[in-house]
Length: 429
Image 1 (cartoon, one colour):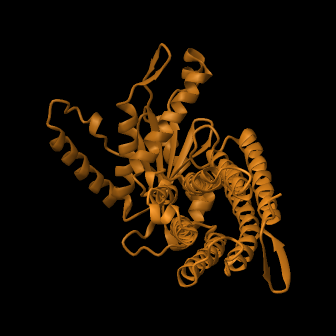
Image 2 (cartoon, rainbow, N blue to C red):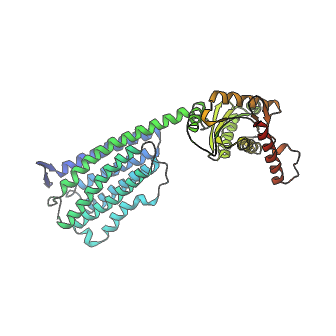
Image 3 (cartoon, rainbow, N blue to C red):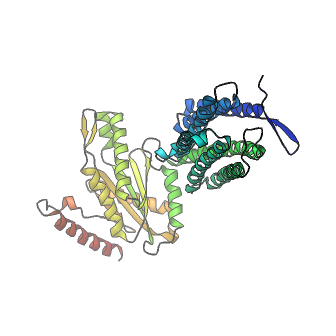
């Protein structure tokens, strides 16, 4: 019967076979847990991580069977499987961050496979040890790069995980150097086995705990996002808009001293629901949300207040800027045809605008003023933008209502800019 070698470290006798079997069992257990999580949540990174641990456990099991199975299986195949598992760990972290998965995830496995084609490496135990540790270091370096490149809310946890992987990388580096300085001929004669085994065991356990914390933080972020967004359209809800208002008020922008509140209401929305069905109505709400977000181009936030009412909060330099953005949203929606089944739906929106200096802006007052302006836009025939100037509302001159349809587009736009400037002058009186 084959007797597996032992190594001694800090007064302990450690049977390598026992250690590898325990290691493989832990990896397989984690794989089962991650697969079950994937089965219920269908998040791709759970599947990748679970498969990575499964391959890691399988590869370690084949390594533990060295002497019981052909060397080709316990060496070349086993380590290839282990490094394929590392590639899946890398894939999982890329998926976790929402990044594209590139071919570089296979680099650790490819390094090992390429080295096995070289006779001096394949036939020499010490050279295989150096190759294994080198390939592992490359894989761990890629993982560290992915972890530290994300500067999100979970950055402290990610940095902790990167440190743990760095310790493992360092242990692999020392092990490779020792294999060069004092070439071992087998596990039994390897003086650095404990150096590799104990840091790996510690880092493995600590990494699992850190990864669990990372998943918890991600779940908390998702719950927070759900609390601040509208489930149908994906834009901010009323609570999210309030949070955005507070954030914008706290930012100092000398070139944009004003907070603009845009209150938008889809015209005759009930008729769309009655005529085309609620599914079509939902499609219109989703389409308009995309229009609002696209038209803002990152200049502010857009959200759904409820029903067919939406709002946008942004920092602007003056009334003209706010009115121009509102008109961009109105005109973009008006020019679209929303196709839902057999229905081709055209819809318009009315907009009310209120402005206040950011330093002393009051959300309730802004909402009341924007409501008054929206009411004025509705009373003026809908498909209009109106601005509240502190007591009365003015209708914004619209490009599509100048009676100049045959005029060039740039000429009509110049007319609108001039009219908006006159409106701004009225508001400053």
